[in-house]
Image (cartoon, rainbow, N blue to C red):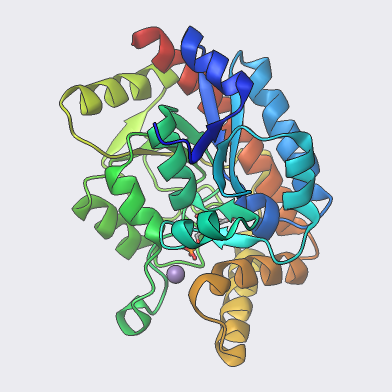
Length: 304
Ligand code: PSU
Ligand code: MN
C-alpha cells in the first residue's frame, strides 16, 4: 500500500491479528456538529466500538497523509480549528499535496477504508441526490465511491434534505444494495420512516456479514449500505424537522450557497432552527449505528 496512507499502530496491529475494525468519518466532526458535542460524540462512538470488541479508526487528512486511526490531538484539531477542508474524492489530491488539515466525507473515508482493508464504516447519513438535482446536477460523490469501495456502510438512511427516491435510483444503478436493518423501509435519518420500501432487509448482523461475503466473494466490487433507523425514543418530530429543512433549503437558496458548502450549511441551519433538537437526534442515531456497525464488523471477522 502507498505510504500516503498512514495506519495508526493500533489499526496496524488489529489488521495483523484479524481483530475487527470500524472506520469513522471526520466531516461529521469538523462540519457536521458543533464543538464540544463533536468531540464528546466521537469519544462516545469510540467507546461503544471498543465495548463491542472492535478497534475504532477515524479517517482524516493531515500533514500530507491520509490517516486511518488518529491521535487525540488530531481529533481536537479537527473539532476546533476553522478552515478544515472538507475532503471528498475530488479534493483528496489537493488536500494531500498541500499538507492541510482535512476532514473526510463518506467518499473520502471510503477511499481510505477500502485501501486499508477496513470492511465496516459507521456514519450518520450519506450524501445523495439533492432536491432540484435535475437543474443543479448536485449529486454527492458518496454515491460514486459506494459503487467501488468494498466496505459496508452503516447509516441511519438518507436525510430528507435530499431527494430520497432519486438517491435510491442512483444506488440501484450503481449496484449498491440498501439493506434495511430490522426494517422494510428506508429510514429518513431523524425519523424512522420515509414511506419508501426497500428490496432487502436483515434482522441480524450475521445476515449482513453473509451478504458482504457473498458480494465480494463473487468479485462484485462496491459497498453494502445498511440503513439502521434511529431508535424510537430519540426520533424527532417529523413536522418540526421537515419545516426546518424547508427553511434551511430556502435560506441556502437565498444566500446562493452551493457546491460542497451546501450540506454543512443546511445541517447547521437545521440545528439552529430546531434549538438543538436535531443535534440530539443526530448524536443518538450515530451512537446506535456505532453499536450495530461494531457488531457487524465482529460478525464479518468471524465469517472470513
Ligand atoms: N449527511 C448527513 N450528515 C453529514 C453528511 C451528510 O446527514 O454530516 C456529510 C457526510 O460527510 C457526507 C457529506 O459524506 O456530508 C456529503 O457532502 P456532499 O453533499 O457535499 O457530497
Ligand atoms: Mn454536492
